[in-house]
Length: 178
Image (cartoon, rainbow, N blue to C red; front, side):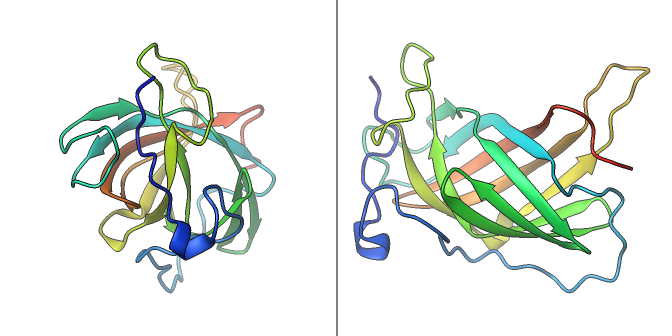
């Protein structure tokens, strides 16, 4: 099995799959724009390609491209603010118009050489979301083109190495309340 990023941030969290909040440089802006959608009570899963940007990822070199494994993102919304839970990780979010800004981080897991997602300690790493890429754009479902509602963007992540994550989040279950 290919090991994406085996080195954990032990000094920062004390264990390989730490609990709680993983800091990054991404922050939430002040927001006066009303959200275009109420995301309260929705669950999304992430898909996309992670591109290694820097050295430091065990068994992977810069420019390697790996497919991420889907993980559920549970959202609770109060006004513009979002509380996001991914596994045991907590992220903060803020929705301004159709833009979702993220702060925090999570365990990014990727497929192994056979394309399987094992969700073990050797198929991912903890990454903080960076200021250079912490925005997703909400696109509503389009019945005419059979396109599902999505959150999409390129996230910049930093763990034991730097990663660019071209992510698409798809809704699990029913569409968000309008």
